[in-house]
Structures are given as structure tokens and as C-alpha cells.
Length: 153
Image 1 (cartoon, one colour):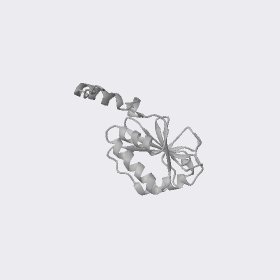
Image 2 (spheres, one colour):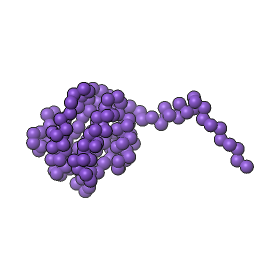
Image 3 (cartoon, helix red, strand yellow):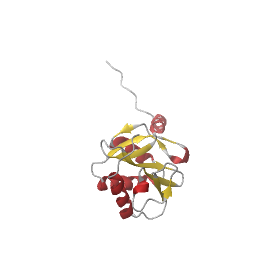
Image 4 (cartoon, one colour):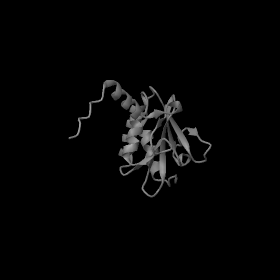
């Protein structure tokens, strides 16, 4: 007859919970295992610190509403969004003071997102705390970006 397994003590439960929590890398970017699909992306968003998690949830909803069959993955500790067989058009990344959207063909968007990149066509949009999002403009960029050839990563 098997012996009953003792219930976890509060101290052990706290240790297990802390061990299961994602590590935040420099700048507060969550370290999430690489993976395809919605699950890893939702784990990343849930692990985003402070106000950034709500921004991540809102962006994810906006992207899915704008591109209904969007493909999702986490690579290099960043959620990526793309079209099946066509590569990635958008990435998301946490920094200490903002959330960065990377439009991989952003130089082709009208108007282009405001922050230039060293990587030719890539353009960035930074989202800071307590700054209202222009969701219509974001949706327009997302729609345009989803119709361009994506990055193969």
C-alpha cells in the first residue's frame, strides 16, 4: 500500500512557486522558453512586469483582431507574430521604461513607425507607461505589416 504524500508546507509551496516564476532578464524582459503557438506568447505576456503586462494583453488582442489567423511564437525571449509560411512581421520586447514593437518591414509602412533601426527596413514603436495608445494607428501598421513579406528567423 502506497504511503500518502504529505501536503506541501507553505514554505515549500512558496519555494516551488518562486522556482516556477519566469526570470526577468535585464530591463525586465521575461525569459520564456522558445515555443510556437499562443501558449508561450501568453506566458510571456503574463510574466511582463508591472503595467507592461496589461499593454501586452491589449496588443495581443489588437493583433489577433487585426490579423485573425496570425501565427505566434516566442523566440529570443520575444513574442513574434506572422503569417503561416510567410515569416514574421512583428515582434514585441520589454525594456525597463517601455515596450518595443518591432515592425520588421516598417520602413515600408505608411507612415513609418517613428524609431529607426540599424537593421535597414525595421522600424520601432515604443510604448511608455501612462501614454494613451493610438489603437487605430497601431491597427493600420499591423494590417499593413501583415501584408508584406515577413522575416525568416
